[in-house]
Length: 320
Image 1 (cartoon, one colour):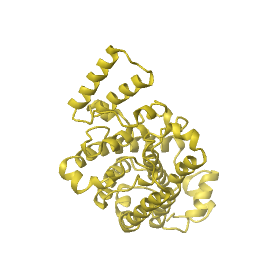
Image 2 (image 1 turned 180 degrees about the vertical axis):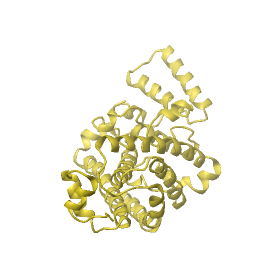
Image 3 (image 1 turned 90 degrees about the vertical axis):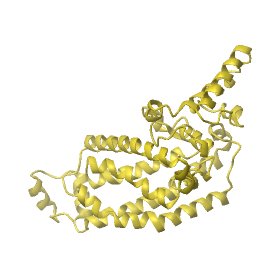
Image 4 (image 1 turned 135 degrees about the vertical axis):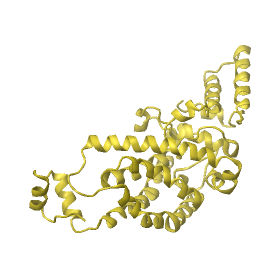
């Protein structure tokens, strides 16, 4: 809770006139506890999990002919009933695990120093901290994800998330309860290393979940703003991981692609992209077929599924 309740008291405390956003923040939070403000995350997550995936459902329904070219696995279509079942399962996990975890984790937020006080952070400060959060989470998540693909981790925990071999937006948070708890660690490391304002923390949680929904959307849409983010993986990168499934030793990173490139866990994905590009260009001569066979062998030697997806010719009509 803020130590002052009026604009005059706040301006005296920080030694300058409040900005419009700071005045709004003061008016909204002056009589609210820090714990209550932290619990806003529960509301934000509920809204994001419920509404953001609907964007892809709507564009698929309203612009079926146009958007179909960008569907990564066009031969697999889930009914509205199946999507609703996925949403119900996610909401069950939300009520039983995510919500209670948020309620119980407030002491850790106090410990690392997330503040609610004035002055508010500048846009530059917020952006810089969010970049750190994304990089730290991505690197840590990469190694935890690789662990979850060992036999024990996959059979006991991660298998649940891979029930959707062609992921949809609603399935982004669909996972075993233990995985939900484990993957909370990478999300908390960035704010623990570079603690900021509660608003920055809200943005971090919201943006990370929106990114996960986009990554699991099943659509490689060319006009999405994330196309301009360097080293961003996106739906196409992660969809390959789901397609390969249990045998996957590729594309473990959650947001970016640099970890998979550095540690060589994107070889199968890059092999497939080359093969699909050859098909797109209509290469038919013997030399190119021979090269395709060599690429397939490389995929196989990497311990991955080396065969083309059964929908590859259709897949190639979309953006590469």
